[in-house]
Image (cartoon, rainbow over all chains, first blue to last red; front, side, top):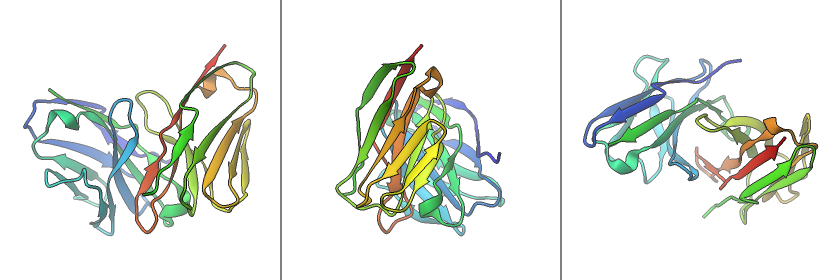
Length: 115
Length: 111
C-alpha cells in the first residue's frame, strides 16, 4: 500500500536553530499538507500546497515557516528559528484529486523537540 | 467557526463490549472522515462518509453520517484490545483546502 514517508522520525534542536522536516508524499497525489499535534492536543492544520504553491495557511504558519517541493518528490517544512512552543509532532499528508472526499494519507510524523 | 466536538473524550471498556463514539458540529460538512491514531504514529484513515444518512461498515466498525451532515457516529461491535487508540473525526473546512479535526476519543479496550 502506498505510504507517505517522513524523516527524521525524531529531531532535537536548540532554540533559535533552523530545522527542515522532510516528506515524500504518495507519488500520484496532488495535494500536500503539513499538520502538527502538540502533545495531548488536537491535530492542527498548518499549510496546504497544490500546483507548486501554498493554497492555504493557518495563523500558526507565520514568517518563520516555509514549505518547498524542491524536486517533484520531496515536500519539506522549514522552521527558520525554532521556539520552545514549536515542540510537537509534525505530520505530512497527501491526498488525491478530490481533496474533500478522499481523506488524507498521513505519514508517521516527526517528533520535534526544541530545547 | 466550524468545530467538531467528539464524545466521549475517554472510554475504557472490556473486550467484547459494544461502544459508540460521536462527532458533532453545528455546521454542515460536505464529507467527514474517521481516523485512528496510535501513540507516536500518524492518523490512519478508516472511512469517508459523504452522503447524508450514509452508513458504512468496516468489519466490526459501523460509521454513520447524519441526515443533515452535521454529525457522525462510529459504532464498534465486540471491541477487541486491537481497537485501542485515539479516534478522530475530520472534515473539510468550508471553502478551503484544509481539514479540521475533532477533539478525539481515546479508547482503551481491556482484555
